Amino acid sequence: MNRAKEVINMDIIVRKEEERDYRRVEEVAREAFWNIYFPGANEHAVVNKLRRSKDFIKELTYVIEVDGQVEGGIFYSHSKIITEKGDEIKTISFGPVFISPKFHRQGLGRKLITHTIEKAREMGYRAILTLGYPYHYEPYGFLGGKKYGISMPDMKFYKGLLVLPLYE
Image (cartoon, rainbow, N blue to C red; front, side, top):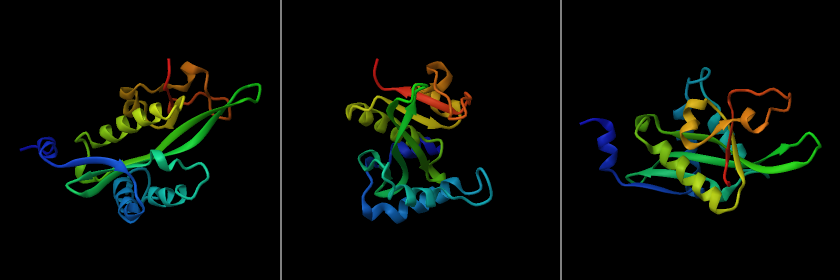
């Protein structure tokens, strides 16, 4: 039996992160990013620090459980776009998002991301920005910032700056 079929037979729950989850969430974040972009990982420390940030959005921080054990998480924070005139447009950003390595490529990340995109829409947020590989996020409707005239502060349009409008 392949692993994707195994997950189908498991009890999977997406729910808001609770304080009792903090240690496990940080452990999973560390495992998920270990030696991916550089030796070791720091995303677990980012998660810990993000929870204390004024921009942290607790209401959009979710975990995914498999058979009662937390195996992934997604974090959101407030962000903004500053127009050429200096006006600020409020947006939100997500990251990190992670799944325990033993459950990679089984649809759990997709469940977390689609669930929280819908929650963000219901909460009235207008757009989500993220930095990442386009092939990871284009399936959810994210497109490069250049399509919307959104650049990084250096005025360059990087391929990894992705935008998802949450309204028509």
